[in-house]
Image 1 (cartoon, one colour):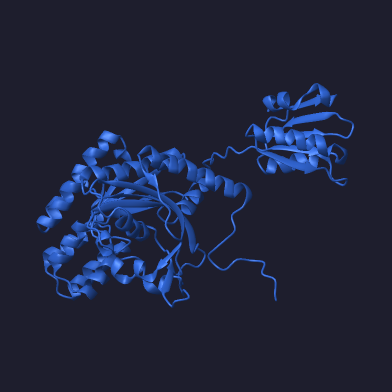
Image 2 (cartoon, rainbow, N blue to C red; image 1 turned 120 degrees about the vertical axis):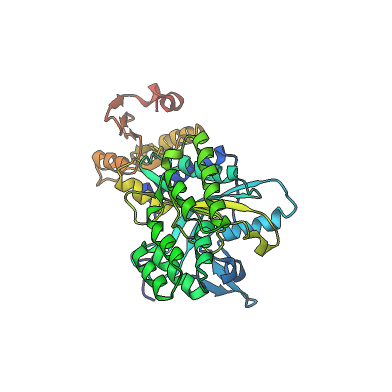
Length: 426
């Protein structure tokens, strides 16, 4: 059998410092979610296919990784965690009438042929508020997304916020059939407003509707665009959608995060289960949104519980790329102590390592090779984020090197530096 030396297209190994930084980043983000009172939940990596079927409103079936269990049931790797959380919430909290706050971290899988050069397996961290239809819930979710970005050092970013019901009001007023509506949505998603106008003209859509769609390109900006949107809204549904965005904005001012919000009335939902406000977070250094979210008031009905809900997911891999390209340091605090020892000092080295570990100090024990110099191990320690190197020589002398500052300390007799005292100095 040929030895496999690489991974399939769209997946990769993450190891050493990069893996540590990714976990550190996840820890900072999760802390923000916990500060808002969200509780952890873990759902399966794969579910019955029905959890992600077309009616649910997630990605097309052809883009799912599907397989069968022993009984012949069709299973699928999750492409999106929100339907899994909705299924779990409907099952576990079926009788709960008060809001439920849940958060998660997990990998998602999309088998998309157009993903050349992009990952097919990505890590997402998200939050879902189940059972709250209020403007205040919308504002909390947006504020939490902003504060999560700030918590990891991101400064230049924005959340684009729209309301799907406003866009739907334009489609309804234009009286488009399903095929025509899909074509218009595709053109608007590509910011091809001129093309949308031409298409609507070709199918003889009334002038007021053509003008409304053409104006979508100008409905991007601050609170002032909502005033213009009111004048374009074709019916009470569209007007109500704009007024809700106004209320959300005024609540966001209480949180002090309004400067990170950009309204975009041309936004349509990434997933078919979205029903109200939708939002995406963008920053420099990545070609895709780092935050994706929205309201999904009818999703839980698919699993047997009527419950308005809203949530978002942070795409960890995209966020890491952005931070690296913006030269924002991902705080990675793990600093191992390396105990390097000559072969004759194994007992002393093991005893010292046990003492350090009992004091919750990460300790790496390395027996010095004959063909390696001390400098080789110093470079190794720096490369892998160690903080201190302690070299126990066969003579009994101990050399301590601070790998961060370069400061060195020589101890001539090991008996003069008991393990406890040495541990306190590190």
